[in-house]
Length: 422
Image (cartoon, rainbow, N blue to C red):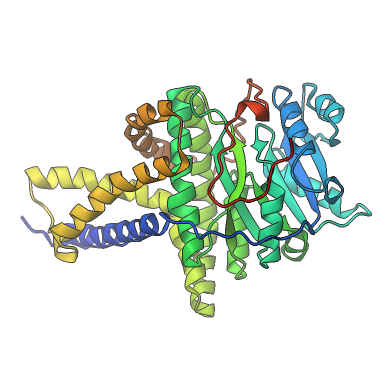
């Protein structure tokens, strides 16, 4: 059989597979430690906390009550809730809990990105000036030390900061459990790892802190299905990195059913592909022009879904090649078998180390057995996301179960030294 034409495709694919595999392995290794920082930074910075809520009457009250009693001077932060196209009593509940509520009705510009941009403009029109915006989702609960930790990072000179995305319901269902495991892995083996290496990570949609002058200087205008990733890449083009606050913890509600999880991940995949098409060329040009690897690294970040599909295609081709050889396998020529064995062991060992570090509930260890099913389901989800990448219809995840902060185990990530107010 003539291998030449197939090799023109399969050899570059194998090179790409090796590059991404080594890249991810290095990140896994670098995400295994967290540099302790016990520097005391007295509360100084003021925050405008923004919560975008669409029909969130079941959960908005618990969040606002939670935000009222954070371990940070109350005069240094205000709570703003955007009741966005609500048809329930979200606005009333938020007001009764003590938030400043702004109701927005716009059926043409639908989605969190639009609501955030509208609220940024509303805050800028106020007499009071804030040092930074903090953004939460309505289903979140927030660790009492969150603003204190963000204050610490702002004092370091950081401007765009993502907090630790924990789970408030990891034992509700196997879907919520495996979803939580995925977030914990990303927290350590992506966000923390990139922060340790001095690279830019990305905003995660909630638990975000952004200096107000960043929004003023660069504008918002991020209205894709993944407005957080879009804004991260927009700033990265200008050389502004997104950093990581490992001890600023927000507890996010994970989907309870597989279809909820499917729809949410499909929306993320759509947004990633849409954002990638628009920003990959810009990142490449600016990265080469400015000679900054941190900007070029953004390409690796946004091409993760592409790599997942490419990997799935390569695995299928490998099986076929084992039956009817049609291309030259150079994987083991690029990297020795021993290196692949080390990588294979690491892929199973490092997640176990992460779960042990954060002391997950016993039930989660059982869910870990189902984790591969969750991971493999990303392939069809991502493929459908690619096919629908230009569909920007917002898919809202409904939340029906309210949880108070006292019902959540306040996981500490290692070095927070502040004492929580009773």
